[in-house]
Length: 368
Image (tube, rainbow, N blue to C red; front, side):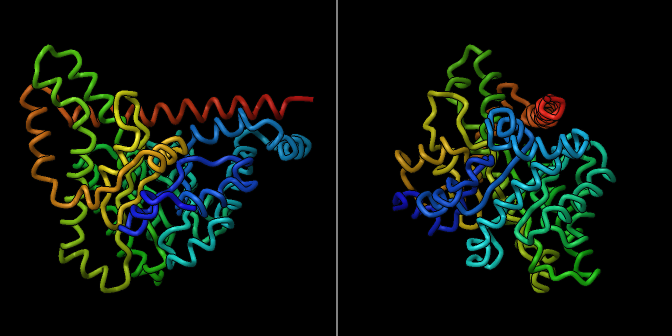
């Protein structure tokens, strides 16, 4: 039975997606989370796949042996393994996809993070991954770097659903919304049905608090202490206001009239990093109709066991959110600089995970 708080979140229009995937989970665990924990989608990233394969025990052994026998190189092996997992997850979530009219039941797979500053390479691999997974409920994750923006437009223009990841700043988010609208307009011009193209914009949350709190902890003032833990939720609420303003614009209304779906905001990095914070805060304090929240399993269970649904905690909260940002600026916290640093660190972290994954798979392929 689904816990009441998860049912209430879902009924209010919040889509809960699991931020995790591995082969053992595909042997029944994912379906169980759909039926008992209101999970309606799955996201992956290089860190998740590195953990899945490095600690996967025997679940990947047979496929690795087959790839070794076939003489497959490391990168091709990673592509085969990860796309197989994503395809299987898409199949398990097909009932959710069908019941939601294509809104949910989505599974995201990310392009090679080493392409984060290569627009053309990202767009090429996005089409390749879409073709290999070959499921209409897949999504291709593309980072919201400067080079990622044109790749986002190109990929959407090809009729491919996109999860835009690693968004931290409001200014970059505006650029993402523009890239999405341009891609959808081009897709329509190319004859694609825009109602079949789904997109989400993954706005990272907890990492903002971690970075800003570190600045605040270096200050010896009452105001700094009072502002701890407020930046991330305020930033997300300002993003939501940016989204609603964009949705009300004449340009978007024209695309919507042609069947275009909105690019839903997705709250990512929703596991708390500070153990003093309520582990459900980045879910229940960021509930709004039409948003997605991608949760690690531990956060999902924390919400189920101790979270309290408080209705829409985002809409109409932008004035107080702006005040938080003004207060932070007044004591010397440059949120734009923080977000720029977080984007760079996020790309570097995913590249590190990818290289670790390559090392793990290389060792497995070289084994006798």
